[in-house]
Image 1 (cartoon, rainbow, N blue to C red):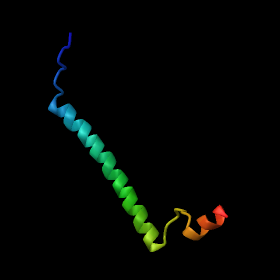
Image 2: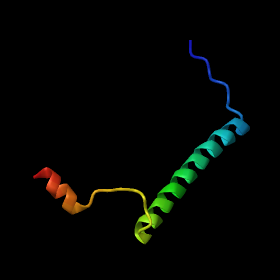
Image 3: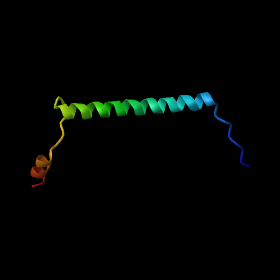
Image 4: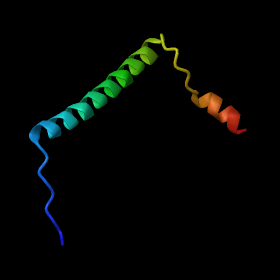
Length: 58
């Protein structure tokens, strides 16, 4: 027979959401920082250009 589950407390719910938001915020911050460094040309991130991709395919 089905039994209703216990209600999750607001503090547990808020803690879980805060963790999720903190992770999302850190990832957004990293992406923005990487984008800025690529635009300024100070990036150590290596990404293939369109010309290099065409040469590899040939």
